[in-house]
Length: 256
Image 1 (cartoon, rainbow, N blue to C red):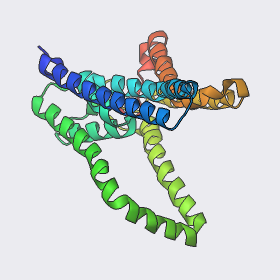
Image 2: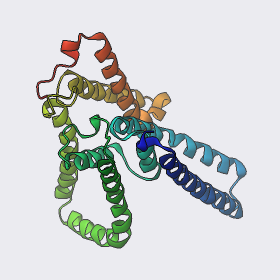
Image 3: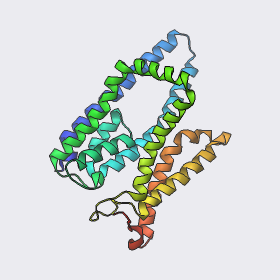
């Protein structure tokens, strides 16, 4: 049986999911109880619960897209466990890819991981990396934030530039990977090529369309769904292009 999706892994996943759901229910019950003690109307409480539930759909779509992205190399269970607790596509994919490539395996998580040692290392890297913010933030956030606020008060323009530069640098890494990322010549789809460029361009176009639609009052709700819809739409376009284009064009890679 596939060790990545055997009964032991599934049991761990179910325990994690049960704990997360139980925690959410615990705080929901306490919040409702406290709201009633404060005299908040039942209809207001109900509306708050419903609106909050709806706003969880957009992040959930992004999480599903991340699980699908990681599943090629890691199976479905480990990404399910990881993203049930904390994580996002930019961190999880980067951490998993770096861990795999540390073993000299070119192609990152685009290929199934069959070695248990590699799989365990990926799991530890992804998990420990996500634990660190939970440890460091409560201890150092207040001190770091006070320093940042002090620096920002002296030079607000510089603070804005640094924040924008950090974000642009992160995005540029993904853009550069799609345009000129070098992959293994023996692995189809690992290097920059027609499909990677299609994913990049289609996701940008879809994101712009979603943002434009969200500017209309009646479609304001699309604002929270713009990114996941753009991600899933781009994935669908790439899959379609891979089917309808001739193979020598669809799988053409200039950095394979």
